[in-house]
Length: 237
Image 1 (tube, rainbow, N blue to C red):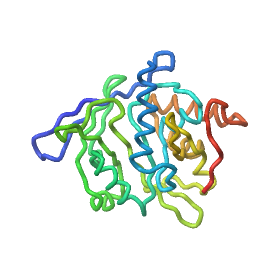
Image 2 (image 1 turned 120 degrees about the horizontal axis):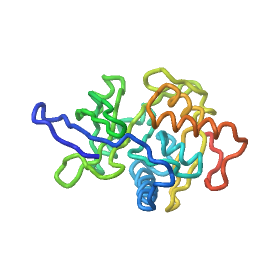
Image 3 (image 1 turned 180 degrees about the vertical axis):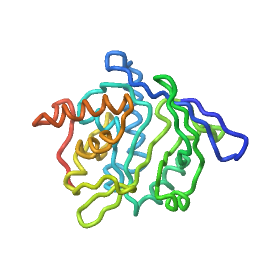
């Protein structure tokens, strides 16, 4: 990912991001190691085994599948609304800034250009938690341009056993939302969202990555057991 800071207003950034998945045969060992290290970093960032945040997105599907079937360019997490402030503050203390996507457009087959602006927790709440990202800062307080430096943030609410996404478009019983506890390479524990939720998300999108992910999700849902290569235990808090 490359970034460019705009002169006016000063709190806006352009992000140039890869958006075309490569198949598993072209994923390098270095990329796999970086992805696994990013999961470890995520558990240190927000807390090991914490119920108030949960891994989503393409990395969650890879954990369900037990293999890296495509490349990954960012991380996705779901954060409980009542813990949003404390979790974001923890990330900011460790070198991340909270941003909101203002504009996003795909070009050609493998490039996405985004315009983001920095926001605080109050502004994020006022906007209904829409289109939020945590972006890691480098040594000169500019957005980092290295692999896996962006965390997409989605907020959810708990209410009487029902989990609802911030925009109200997806609601699931708690027992169908939480699914797995994943053990990372270094032995850290993190919660992973269910295939039912991931299916609901990807079914609403139409990009090339989403079509590939949806194909994998539906294949996994047709199986009766999880793959042996994923070290997990069933988890319903």
